[in-house]
Length: 637
Image (cartoon, rainbow, N blue to C red; front, side, top):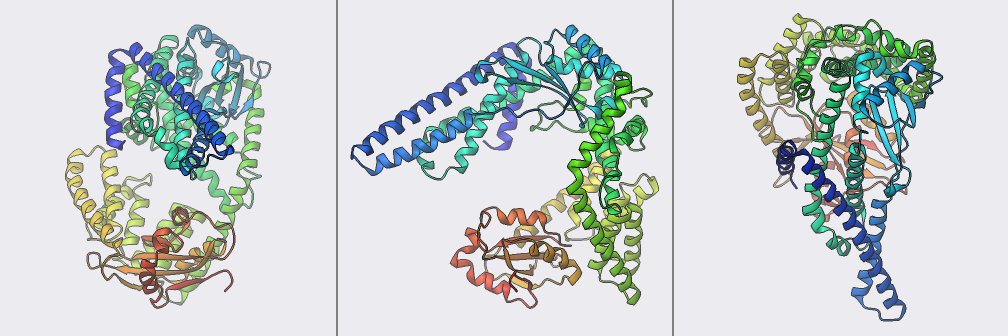
């Protein structure tokens, strides 16, 4: 089912759910039962077919169709057993007891009694800005659920007591009556069908025979059941919100939602990047205490200079079909509370409820974070050291004369890694003095300035991006136009936005046409030297040096008349002779995500079925023959 068809189906089911929620839930439960029954029936049929076929073969009545039947039934049987054997993933977190935090457990018990939910079997603390109740059936399909409440310490530090109580009421609302069991059952049924689909995609032997039995379900049943399960889950989120409104009040529930949105955005965009920036100077995270620092940082986050903008963006953001939670605007409308910035915290729920136990919990989470982050930290430190050496090398080169634009952009990136945005801006301004018309530099500077907490810089950045977007057909035009659209929308400049969207549509159409031409290899494509400097190619060489599957590699530029200002590169990678080569269908995409070049590019793996075809040999040879195309001679060279 296409994405737009699925969206229409979800919209139709949302209407049905609002019209008669009880009937909708019952029908969805019936479909879940039918889904389980279909899997079990198919399992029984596959077992019978396998048994009969093996009996026939053992007694010497061998026919080709019987062999195919045995292979197909065995393949289907394995896939079905994998789909049914859904082992619950153990929730992560550190257990906390009543003895450690009596006030927290008093609040939990008070809220769950008012909700009418069962007592959680255990409470876990983790380091996320989130809370959840996880139900795990001890006896599989027979039930006897174990309830686990997971509380993120950052969440407790970001909310006051009433807001946290509203979060608890929402989570316990999922456990009231049969609400949680129905949702969990529907979820497990959906996961079973997803696992079955994944198994069939991986199946090789007997795949075509076995999948005849499942084609109807994957084409007709599963998309509709999946849409119903999604709508039911979203409906249950509203019901859980209603529980929070009844138990704690609409205002604390709504302001808590806003606080969580702003605090999560602050942590993601400012706090954690600031912590990880220390890796540029420190070889290990042993001196870092991020959760201890977070305790004070979260109190002032609602007063952050970007908080108002974050709230506007959150309210405008449409709910994602991959997330069953409604959007913030929908949840605030449901609470009938306007979107507004919450006041800064004076005493957080963590401080009020954990009291003297809070420092110990902060220490535990800091220790856990340092242990889990150690390897990533060391990698960042090594990368930062390489960037520092690059910056020193470029500074020395600048003393000898003007730098190549690609080298200047590398310097700007190194400065950002080592010293932050201010250093990057300095390097980019210096570059524009030497290369005032370079669109890449104007785009990078504009993109940085538009995000700085300074209105004058914002306006300068927006002007730079406008000039880049309207500067002709080149790789930076579309991303610049998209940044301007988001900037105008965030500032609610609707008249300008309407005009700009017409410009954006023209740039999108032009860019799409260009991409089609750049990826078209029919006729007589023209290839030229890549034009990249040795420093720009160094990250690619380092990557290939550490990639055992990679042999020789070439880089060329594909030139097309429709895009004379585009430097579109093609990276051709030959396989090495080592054993255990990665999958030829997907390795090129994985490699592309790791390659760093200062221009748009595509990756050709010569082992891919398309490029391994003899019909492509002349085209590959033409690319390899371009002067200076060979950039990596292989591991044995």
